[in-house]
Image (cartoon, rainbow, N blue to C red; front, side, top):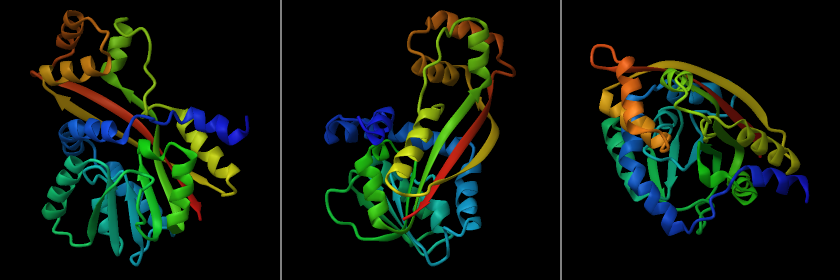
Length: 265
């Protein structure tokens, strides 16, 4: 087995039918958008600013935002460049993006409902951009990103994420094993880098870090952590959450590290 195949296996590509993937993201769209609205906005601006500093993002650039979702990055990118083409498989995600476009009074964001790689030709762009997008987890997807980008490819991937509430649950031994997810998986970053290197590119990695506090009601916190750790005993989880509740709220301090991989195409 060659090196590229070894690292592609670590990307854990989703091989479900496109229709199934689309339905799953449609179901997640509302929660995804709500998290975008109430969560930290640090990376939304920090990533485009970093790309400007590196000379990748310019006022005349045309950007393809792959897996744009409800516009976490598309909005900020559009304020700094000529145009953004936001591509997403989920029509419901794109509906929320249109709400953000109207809210920000932007006329330079164009939406494309499509899987990635796209099944039809969508043209060329100065930058092919993707942030936390499962659809880029294959050699084919990375090659196509490089093919449609005249200037640069960019991938944003979380590599570390801590949560003060989860630390409490660990200390109380409610969580016996950490489930490695896309927000806390260094293997994804390593695999992206090495595949791009083996394809003949010279990828560069920059790191951005953020700390923020999220306030939730007891029920919101219960739903959040029960969904993440389905094996938890509901009564024990609610009891522990009540012990850290202050002023009828659960406060979670989150520390996150985002890696930004860029390569000249």
